[in-house]
Length: 117
Image (cartoon, rainbow, N blue to C red; front, top):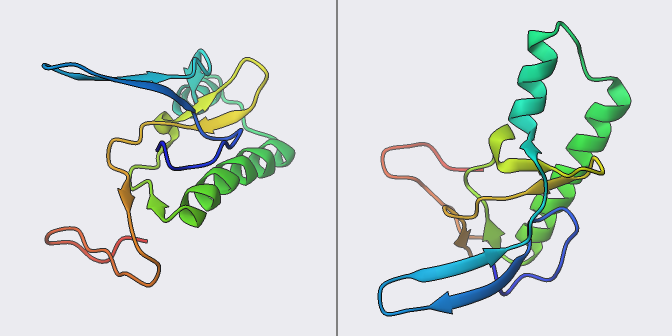
């Protein structure tokens, strides 16, 4: 993630500390909840997102993933729980533990699975 340029819709890596026993990643403090929690709350209260909010959330997630792809990075674990919602209502993709660098035109396959998209 250190090779990627700043994007307001990605949780930022601020620092990396390497010790003899561990690697410490210092990430931006982005928000108090994730998109999965928001969707669960709405569902539990028989509420729905307005179309405007669906477009806004989807657009922000798309911008983050497009930014990663432009840097030849694949997230590979995108789900509502890996989208942080900031106090201001912005979405930030996080949890880059399964991210891989891929050269353009390369087909990625998971062991025993269909191609990943």
